[in-house]
Image (cartoon, rainbow, N blue to C red; front, side):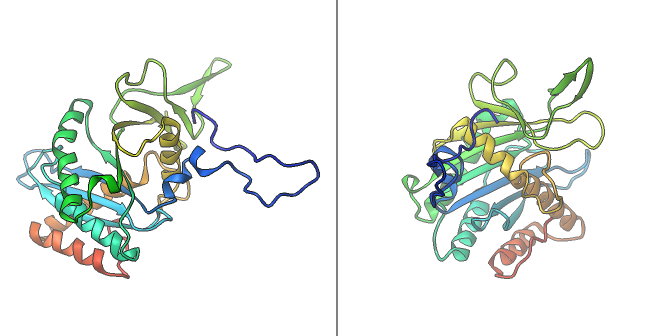
Length: 288
């Protein structure tokens, strides 16, 4: 994973210590969860070519410290538009739901996995989506200094493949292999390729992750480890998946929203429906 993820604590010979076995949280990734933390995923589903239907925007977010319980917010966007004009309502609704489920506490750290963005759209995301997200915090009276925010872009549409030459035969690399340096990553951003899944057939395709904004202070190794952890929390599979679970859930939520629109649901009803589910204490993760 590009660095030491854990080390054993020092022990005196023959003595059993009650101290923690692994290193202190600040030197791993677990320090991110020492305070309320919300992991978000954003994706857009576009209609078929020639269709007059709008694109569906989905934003999902974790609601507890286990990073296993999610809420989703769905809305519509002009057809074919990838960079979203406004995420304010979705972010605001998810933050309010988080506070409601955590005794009024707002998240101290927010990490966003943004799917479906090309390299040439990074600037647009920072100019349009980032201010819309920040506006949601401002409207809730949550000033910037009280939280940290990171935006990580996930990309599967690339031509990079990782493989291993074993005695002249090429095989897929092992699960968890991470490439975070060298000539195949960006010189401008913190970027890495992570092969987080076991390919059932053919050549495995790593996901590329690019950190385009960070006020938390994430190190590259911490971002790599957290992302690999997140690929193991996908509840529809008993093993790790090909990319981070928040982005995966956002993909399914956008698909569900598209199906609801095709069934006759109006755009305003779509937002109202998911906000009602967020406020329901027993509301399930219907979107997956």
